[in-house]
Amino acid sequence: MLQEFLDWAYARHTNTLSWYIRPLFVLPLAYFAWRRSWKGIALTIVALLTSMFWFPPPQQVDPQVQAFLDMEKELILNIGELSPLYLLSVLAVVGSLTALCLAFWRRSLGWGLVIINLIAVLKVAWSISEGGDSGWAVLLPAAVGLLLCDLAIIWAARRLHLPISLRRPRTATGPGS
Image (cartoon, rainbow, N blue to C red; front, top):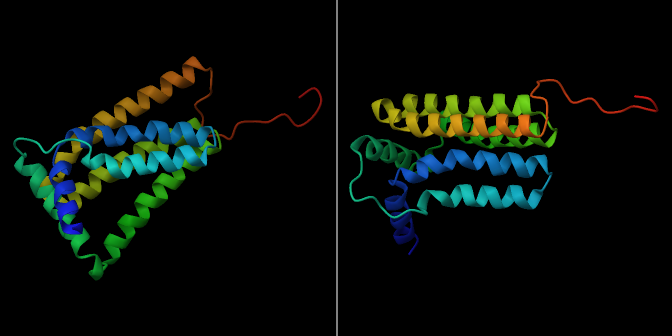
């Protein structure tokens, strides 16, 4: 039964529409971190983890996409043989999402943008490093997602008159401050 579910989910993961929407989960994640909503952050993480099988399987799978997903599947299936690189990759994902939430929790749009851009660059670099030529399949969805996230955050900052800075926002310290 578990294998049937995994096969069902994997077939849907080959639909690259999910590859394009997944980076956009950065926006609600940032929003809920800014609002300091643990519930919103948790729901966004659940949505992010399930989004890979929201779409139907494609009629035809790009061979580069298939090769990349086969590489990822092989890594996951060999989880018993945890290599240091695999463990580092998992820690990098958890750490980067934690850093992203922390940046917005602390109201730093500048650091949030730095982390978003770093996540996208590292995702592409890891994909090419681990997947070889098939890793390039990640480039366009990551670039589109990055561009949309950056533009949305910059637009919101300008609309709400929020500074985009790497410095911590000042707080009033007393009368007349």
